[in-house]
Length: 271
Image (tube, rainbow, N blue to C red; front, side, top):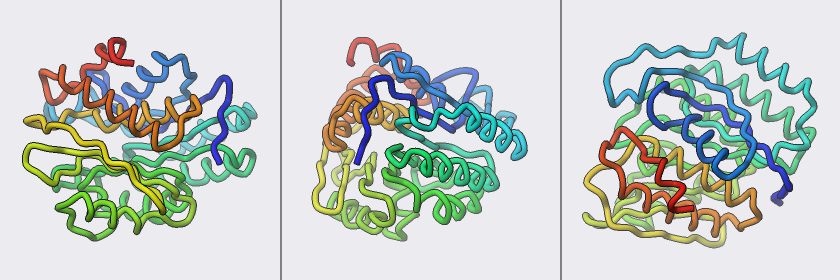
């Protein structure tokens, strides 16, 4: 199913911040480190992660998003796009613009991978307008080959309460339809001192367990997703890509001194 280009390009539509590492800041750092060309569209720009305080959010207007995506299509680079990833979105109307763009890419290159990170909530809290979630489920989820929710997002998408690894796996199977062949769920906690990432397919799963830190770190999910696509683009299987990405993510999290700042400078030491 998956195409492995000698010089892969990854198209990323996510948020951006002036300070710190979330969304496209993380993706660009990871892809440049691994010498992968990244083409990025910033759906929203903020001064820093909202954990630092309430900031003005500059959302990319619909007309500008549509125009820039249409202009990109004029470059005729579809055959070089290994993967498209989408993350945090500024408003619900961005969803349909991205859906149309993704469908056009896939028509011209059905080997392109679509990686959907829903990025709408965590810790039992939704931090976007719920209309965005409804639009993601309706327009983007049916196109995705991979979906990478955290535990809370998986619960919300499947209307399931998850307290065990088994329940996370069972809930993930509800999303394995249409184009979706793998669910890569992060931050599943079955025991007080342990946390796990799990990748699930229709016929198998792999579970990666770690000692739980005192708190999560903003941007860790964005880093996990980008690193997963790096390994996938290098020819690793989805299961091995998830294994490597999960291991390195949790190694780097050990260096975090601020739960709002992902210490990506330690990537050079770990991968």
